[in-house]
Image (cartoon, rainbow, N blue to C red):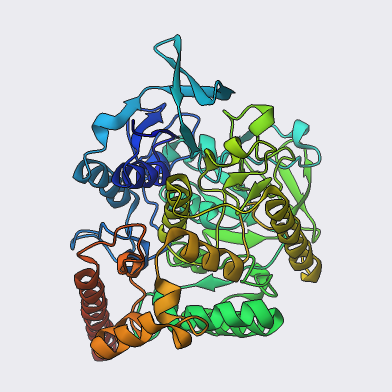
Length: 540
């Protein structure tokens, strides 16, 4: 009989898991409490995280696509939220996943009974329980809104809310709004508030690096991380981490200054924490509002001065603030997990998981049949980094890859926590690493091996030099080999090779070539448009 698998949550990661588990021969079923797929990419006004009307994805289409499902040609270089949601809808239908999804099924909890996973869910007010051999839980990385306790907030006579509860932006017409926190969410809110609010202040405690979506030569910024650069990054991060931090920060700061040469000192964006642990803000959408003065970065909040004034840590007093909105992010959590299997026994800390996916449970049967998706992130753009986790989980469940003994899993976790403490200790800023952040070399090498992608065996400095596969590939098609290694790092490269486990995608080579051609075509079009604009300005 086929092995049965339940996937809880039909956001992007749950969808990818459903498709890959189905492809690998499992009898799989998905559970989604809402009535659509794609998770936060469909704007909603319920109590769940979702995009705003004008959200734009921070990674380019060239790096963001699922490895065997390219974006349609008409999609922007940086997809809009509406384009992203349609993309996941199309993915669902292209692989005939919809009949396997139970919509309107709100999973409450799960438990281990008689060697099976009992998944308990509520539908139309009635509780149901179904049983499965394997269970993958995909709640997303950002679940519980984080709301700092501002001194004196109880005296504030305006409106206070978290960004998750952001209503129709017309609600703020004519208001002075204070955003607490400065990153992607703050940018989205500024764009939404611009047609309505009078003024927006953005309170922040640390500096921030601003980057543009495009480099000076017309490429999307994330094209800089070719496979060759990735392997250099892995080598330096593993053996000379401080050297890599300096190289990366220097490069990012240079890009920031070229893109935005007139950043004002009073914004207090510099100095900023290292970009290796505190990601830069892709600031194309917000920067015009910073320049115009509509949105103004200010110091952190010290306390609320009743009824509507805000005292900042630099002594400045903001008067007549009508609304405070927390743009302070979210804590990772798995709400449906019972205490025995909860990966976050300490809230807002790194999860108690091996590779941020497998439980550190005393029962081997639990370790080999339960997985948490979306709880591990590395410095690699797009959805592929999460797809690789799904590859690895599927290979383990198929018996093609194997988990180490519990003691080794525990040792890995202790080493991971020590690395996190070291990174935080080296920082001069009051920063907190994302709970899901993992060390790049350790994680991506394991994912490549466990997931059976063959990328390291064919390209890396470490395995490739001594690999007969790499030499054969190079001899048979040198031009394509160089394109893979030094051209655009297409997501399809992770589907290129047959390593005897997971099946490769027959369209991978064609897609890699097409991705490179399209990226170059759009780069040339962009440069011509810029040149035309500059010439028009000169003619005036």
